[in-house]
Image 1 (tube, rainbow, N blue to C red):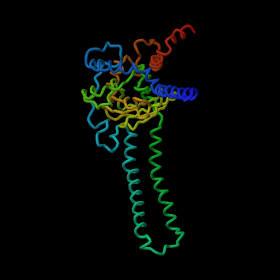
Image 2 (cartoon, rainbow, N blue to C red):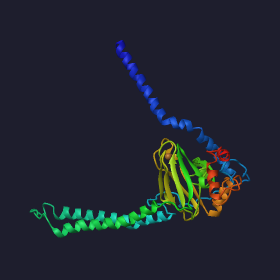
Image 3 (spheres, protein in one colour):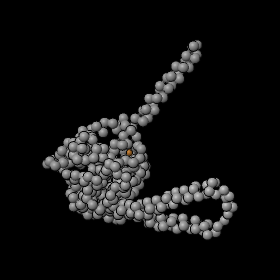
Image 4 (tube, rainbow, N blue to C red):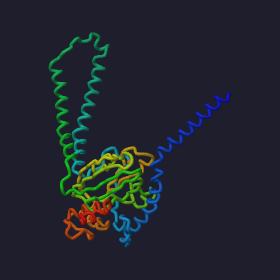
Length: 351
Ligand SMILES: [Cu+2]
């Protein structure tokens, strides 16, 4: 091997070896930045949870002093051997589930069986042995009208409830809806309550042993749950901070992409208190499968209690720090933005 060939081979080898780690690093770049956060929170989680029932309300972290409910087996979570959808706990979920069970599934089954039967009939009845002289018929008005009209009628029958469902799913949230901002991160969720002046808190997966210990499904339990009131329209604002995630809770018929730089909106009303689990549903990196969603649906009274424990206010209430002159709604708004725009009051008084 002459020197030039050797040099070329070395350059290739170096190039390849340089390329391999750079690909690996591209995958790991983001995690490296976030890596300390995950173990740190995982360590902190048991503490927060253990304190949940204790008299540790003074803790600065927004998690403790609120006892989470125990999940009911088979509700709001997948079951082994299950092939159907989960039981639904929102009106759009019930509607969609009804449409699936009583319109789409019967239509699909009927058409599949009909086509299968027709194929079998043609294969048997019109095989060469049984039918040596093929018919030369090329038009039959009655059949042509029928096979055009029947599919059109079926499609109209599917389209009417389908468009109705779509309209219901995309109906803008009413004025009294509770706004919650959900942010997907690699690899955890952030929840923020701008209406209540509660800044973003982070929700990480519980270690599987810890989840099982607490009677929760492994890989679905989270240290801090997303607490939502039942019977109140919820306006979910969903976004991503690094890559595309997807916020999905099957029992609510909710699946909304969390796209960086975009705010997606989803409105729903939960019908029953309980614990409902979901997962990130967009391949978002190495720990995509380990960023569960745990929703704690509570009565409005308990929700107000939780808000108070987080140091927030309910709409209509004035927070302790807010100026007495400030109206309720602006108070909530200023509380929500006070973190971002701390010098705002100073500017307001000087102008
Ligand atoms: Cu994700």
